[in-house]
Length: 88
Image (cartoon, rainbow, N blue to C red; front, side, top):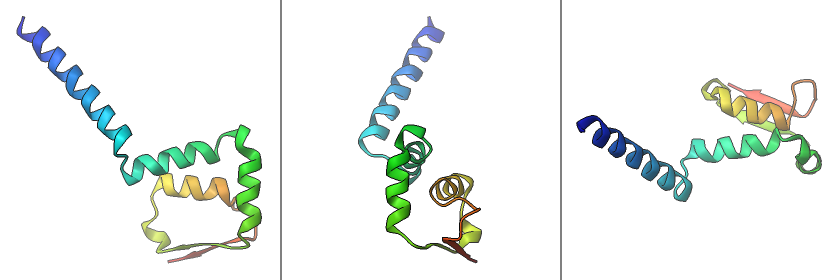
């Protein structure tokens, strides 16, 4: 009985957190959504449009960039292109 109530409470808490996250996304949530967009092959035209608008992409304080931020940046401006600069 106690375990069932506990599991129900945990489930309700999880649902509330998910709902709050959808309504008030964190910076990381927004970055994850943006990463999902730029890595979606059906969005190739969007990626090309973004690349055509910017001749150079700069990452300042590159040493503080996390794995997801790098993945997002690499998806937009691949390493084999000459249109990116890193500043540490």
